[in-house]
Length: 478
Image 1 (tube, rainbow, N blue to C red):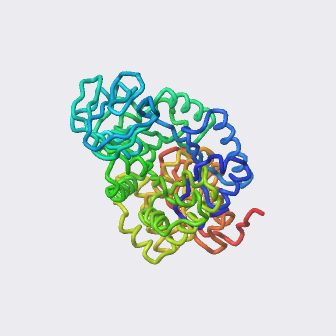
Image 2 (image 1 turned 120 degrees about the vertical axis):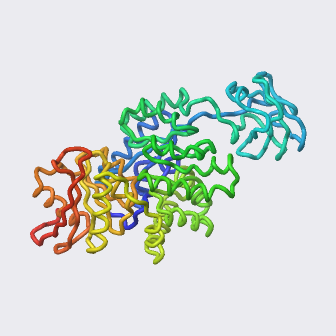
């Protein structure tokens, strides 16, 4: 099944979409990668979902990527004697280490790292920013605050700290257990929550040992401030706009989204735009015009993927949400302004053989109006560099390794095919032409450009370009 669009769709699995039949419907509607949210999924259910996705993958004959999204630290206040309290603007309210039930003047904060780290002047946002407190003083055991905005607080509400750099890693004990479990099932991507600094990626990488690629979720101001370093140590980025919109001014989020997207594109790392993209389709069969514009902006920016969360996980219209996102993306990519916008954001290639070959392949393919760029890739690096160029023609990534093809299913404009490695150069050309014909990327008489490494089967050695005709003697498989 060939997609007509270049941007990929990442659909979250949940109660509305976890059956094998529904997963197949979501794939047929346009989902390329499935996300398992470990905040709401135990290990047994996770293994069941992975098994169902692999069954669907076998049925449709296409590599399907799986992203496991780790929960990360959950910072919450304790409980109140009355369940909730109403505060007044300007009053003093304290968060402390006393486990007694809270009242209208104080509440337990079971996170000593927060008590030790918050300084006077720092903001504390409760319940997704509905209540804003400003620290007046802190002694390591209690934070005395002033109520700045909002008047309601209740049991176990979340705490966000936009001004505070917490001395905690991104992985909790639950995350470590979840990470071991998802790696054992062979997921392709792991999304890491609560990233504040590049060092937060180190532990996940050490545990993963290359068994899955690591996606850094950018959801905190501290991560935005150190974006370049985080990009360097991650395999992909997710713009987690929901949390960004809590910890940063809402009006700043669109600009930050563009900055992250362009920085990731320059680095040749995939970038996913996430959160509330078609939010109204949780309960309605059609989105708002504003949501359609939101999705289209991400596509115009050249994001690798756009993501559905509750829309596909728990909404009333999961298939319709995926189909709508597919239609929006396809329409944008045929807009007369699309190619110009994508080209204007293209970065200079890095001084590597793979980048030089990928640049040359794009320029030749576009100049000669070739049918496709065929990239042989074992590790996936050649596919990544080809996608970084954002060519107008399709990219067909051929890999003998199914895990590589699944990982590349997240990548912009890349059609992944699992194919046995070529025996020699002649076999490589014949195989590329036959697959281009099989997959609908050309017909006899069309030309494709092939990139590969010589000698064959040498990872990281991309150094060859070859223009080839799809001959009349090449027959598509039936």
